[in-house]
Amino acid sequence: MSELQLSIIIPTYNRPHLLSRAVKSALSQTIKGFEVIVVDDGSAEPPRLPEHPQLRYIQLPENRGGAAARNIATEAARGRWITYLDDDDELLPHMAEVSLRALAHTQLPQPVGVLSALEVVTPEGKVIKIQSPPTLKRGSHFCLEEN
Image (spheres, rainbow, N blue to C red):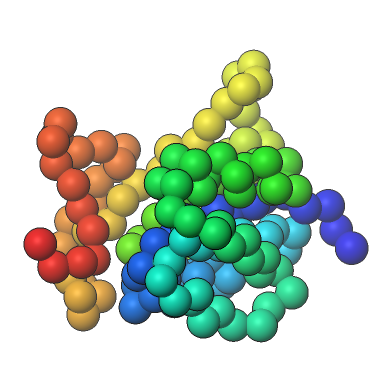
């Protein structure tokens, strides 16, 4: 088995209708040697997740908040690198490949992080804006849920 390069951590709380898209995008990465960790932060109903050898599931008995869920998954992560994916977002299939390539070629001293870009899409999947680097004005937010 190849070395585990990346842990993709997805915290979730009571949003199974969004979680499945996030998990599918994480499992669709174009590299080998990664894991996806879903942390259910005390949802009323446990999410239905696909059977997949790269998918791990951690269920918290009660809601502790997104930061606590991320920290618990970070402690459980086995990958050399970690990335976080919100349950209402999706990764492009090549995100891990591009990010790991950038990390392999950096001359910067560790610790180091990788920022890429953000695509804002309609519910139908049409890209309406690309933000590179992925920054928003203070107080702005983005999500797949209706406001």
